[in-house]
Length: 249
Image (cartoon, rainbow, N blue to C red; front, side):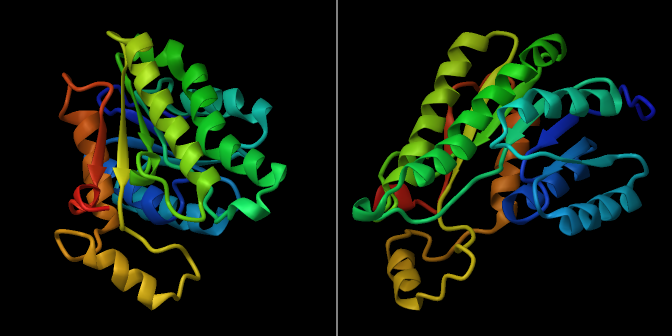
C-alpha cells in the first residue's frame, strides 16, 4: 500500500487510459483526486498518462490492468483499488465496447461482449464497491450514451446495453441512498468512433445538433467532476452532454 492521503479523494476510473477516460482522469486529478487508472490492453497509454499525472503531483496515480469480461476480475479490481491508498470515494465506469450490429448479422458473441462490458461489468463493480463507498459517503458515475434513450441505427445491441446501464444507474441510486449517490453522464457527439471516415454521416449528425459542433472530451470530464464534487444533492440523474442533440435527434 502506498502512503495514505487522507485529504484527497480516491477515484477508480475504468477505461482510463484513452479518449474520454483519460480526460476524466486528468480533470479529477487536477481537482486534487488520486487516480486509480484501469486499463485492459492500453498499457503504454496508461503508463504514459500515469507518468504525466505523477509528474504533476507525486504518488497520485496508479495503474491496474483487468479484463472486465472476466467476472472474477471485477471484485479483485475494486479490492486492489482500495488497497492503493486505503480507501475509495468514487467509481467512474467509463470503459465501454462499441461496434455496429445490424439486426440480420447479430451473434450471441456480440450480444455477450456488449452487454458484459457496458452493463454487467459496471453493475458488479458497483456491487463490489458498495461497502467502501458507504463507509466514505462516496458516489458512482456511469458513462451512458444519448442513444440509451433513442437507439442508434444498426446498433441495437449497443443501444440496448447502454439502456440497461441507464436503468442500472437509476436503480442503484434508489437502493444505495442515502449513503451513496449514483448518477450518469450521457455523451453525444464528442469523439467519432475510431476509423470512422464517413464524412457525410458526420455532417448529417452535426446538422441535428443545435450548437452545430461536436463537443470535447473535457466537456464529459467536467460533467463527471460536477456530479462527483459539486452536486451533493443530486442522485439518480443522467446528464446529457450533447450540445442539445437530444432535442432534435
